Structure formats: structure tokens, C-alpha cells
Image (tube, rainbow, N blue to C red):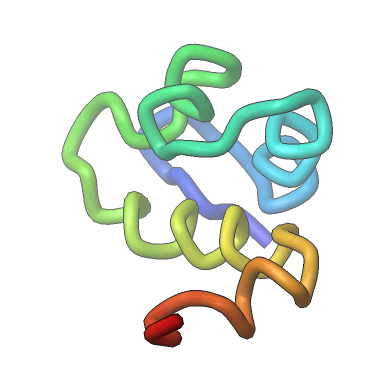
Amino acid sequence: MYVCLCHGVTNETVAGAVAAGATTSKQVAGACGAGTECGRCRRTIRSIIDAAQPSAMKSSKGNKL
């Protein structure tokens, strides 16, 4: 599916940027251009980044030690 309509970037392209090491929406934007125009796709980009994180990192978010 298209994530960024302004640049025609798909979720597969964003996932590829994340797999290549992008950990922020700004890094994804640098890799493929998604999120650099109107910004409506940034929330979806962050969701794709979050989904790619290891589950150990997800479960530790917000936990007080």
C-alpha cells in the first residue's frame, strides 16, 4: 500500500529503509523521501518503524526499573 502519496512511496519501501538501519522518520525521509512534503504519512512511518523493533525493546518501553 502507498504510505506517502506525495512521493509514491509504499510500505515495502519504508520497511526496506528501516531494515537498512533507519530508526526515525527523518532517517526514512532521507532514504526514500517519504514524509518530506505534507507530513500526513509520518504517523504511518513511525508505526512501521515501531513494528520492526524487537519485541524486547517494545516491552521495555515505559517500564520503570
